Image 1 (spheres, one colour):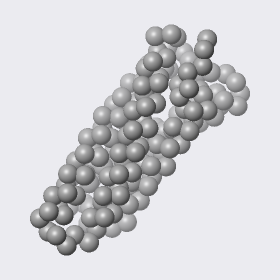
Image 2 (cartoon, one colour; image 1 turned 45 degrees about the horizontal axis):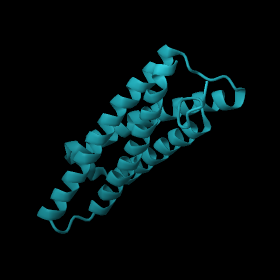
Image 3 (cartoon, rainbow, N blue to C red; image 1 turned 180 degrees about the horizontal axis):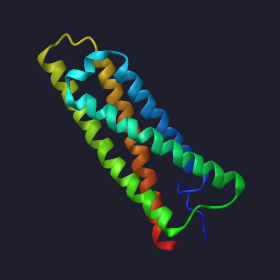
Length: 149
């Protein structure tokens, strides 16, 4: 079977998963450096979703490490379909959380004008958008591989 770069069990998939985890951790750090984010539901939603993305990405990164270094691809149809469904769900949740965080931050900047922490919130939204993009790309690679298994 031909290797699809970015599919489960490849080194490109490992890079995508580590990128997802790194950007999700960065998003959490920028958001959680201050306690004021609890007053907005969109910010709490972002923290919750990024808290789900991190263990998902790290678990699949471990699967990729095992597949790359042991040379046994984890390409059973059941496992791959669970990965595709999990990636799609987390991708939609990440996009929703990123968009809601960006819109609330934009609203805070427009209404207050002197929001001290809005640059942190903007950076957090940007990092979550990058994490979403990597999650979407890995789910599309795995979706492309799913009919061939």
